[in-house]
Length: 345
Image 1 (cartoon, rainbow, N blue to C red):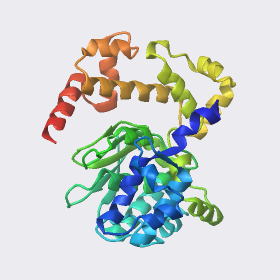
Image 2: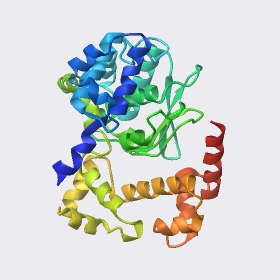
Image 3: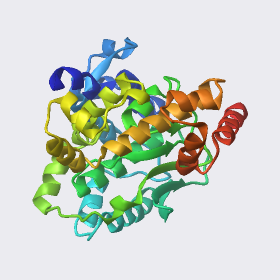
Image 4: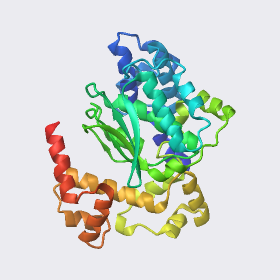
């Protein structure tokens, strides 16, 4: 079951391939050699359902960086010369905890590329990394590339996937659509925002960093393919739990012991594996309810009471309390805000 169900999600869609190649094409460079070196057939790019493996995409990423002599693909105010990511890894390796490591990494990235400048703030139990910039909005892929480097490094340093609460993009939604972005990050993704944000629970900042130089060399040797797969939200036991929850209406969701029974694993094993991946069953159920609430409020005109019932809330007031905890807004205010923002883009 695990192999059959997870393999497709471990692929990279052709839309991300095309976005990665765009910086080369804008500079008039021939993309055929990097595609060939990565083992990607050109005809695969014309298929709307085309996919490549993470190893192929990782090889492509490295090939593009080498061709451009820029590990950030020309998206920064200055080029991120080859070897910069390695130096960031070495700079943060002796950090006592994840917060110190992230602050060092953000400072290093700013020294290298100038803009966008990442800033970490902590408030009300949430850690937010905001990208500051004075230039016009970059492409969605530019911000995604930044998040891949930073989030992937953070996950490796912590030794677990860091589940995200929210990802905002200052740039417009890509031509290929935002569905792949939402699938990749496993969190609510919004385009056309005032600033690009990455939000996660602040408690993860306290995680210790216990990595060696030898481990760093192995991590860098396999990057970025290992980042794209190992720390995606849809790898590991959490993917199986999420798949089960998505198959059912929230009112029918089992308790923790019931989910363990469905997956045919002891509850203690399920709890241990989820904890190793930085997840909890309650948090996953909350995330899925939140995502469904956001989608229903923005894309439908359904009554808020009906949405609350579908999400398994006993009464609308309970939904309002939960929604305010998620966003500090009422459901109605969130709907108005998002629709007003979409109309102005």
